[in-house]
Length: 212
Image 1 (cartoon, one colour):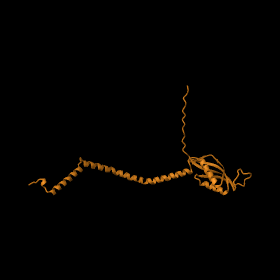
Image 2: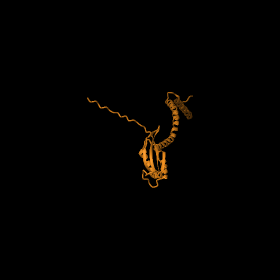
Image 3: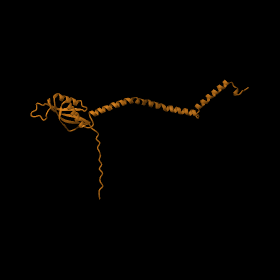
Image 4: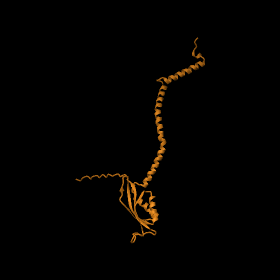
């Protein structure tokens, strides 16, 4: 004689409820019209878009790791540029250069009698700024003077050097020499500066209206 569902043993009812729950969950996952299926489709699409983004992020991590190295290289290049601009400045800086030479002469015990600027020579990437110099002093002081010129912050080339003994000249000397002065000489001293960007200034003249 058939019995109702409520008369079934409770273990059998529990098995039936669990099976029904699994069926409903499966229908929710696989039926196209169910909200769960829509969310699942959106999740799969998002995961498919995530993979190329992860690949791109992995490639960009290399640049992130090299950022500190590139920044360090840039700082080193900036320091080198500052050093080069000190050795070969952009502008003439004639006054500063003359003070540097005079300071080297005073420190060495040499007297610079004459320092005449000659014509500037244009080169493809820089300018030469020569000076004709006449100086005198003790022999070893003159050697020390040239040594100090080589240690200055700017590049200096010395050429056309002509040294003579101060006692070999005939007649009265042109200058009153200091005690111990043994040599006098002339030479050409050349320093350098780079070409600065020349920006022509366009001056527009406004014509005055004609009077009638």
